[in-house]
Length: 134
Image (tube, rainbow, N blue to C red; front, side):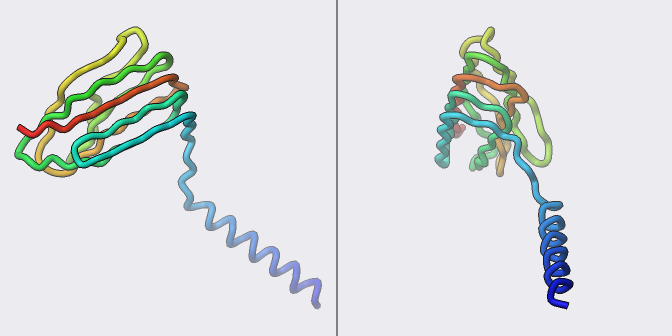
């Protein structure tokens, strides 16, 4: 009887663990020497090695605003997206052959997300975003 109760307890515990893992979102991000900073009007991402996704949530307080950004990588490729009102727009792809990428994008009033993604291993990246009120 005691052995059957122990086996039943182990089976129950394994079942609970299996169901709890079923709903987990497993991250595949790889980062080495990652530095991430965010203020109300700027954000920075620097790393030695990176693969995966990083996001910054910002707010545009004017009717329209501008984001100035500068980005570079030594190897690999990185995509930059802006997500606002449920719409995801690719604004740039950063590769070593492009050198330092610098640009200005316009955002509407409200919350928006800057998403930085890399499917392959990117090395020595630096991304700086500054919100400019108009």
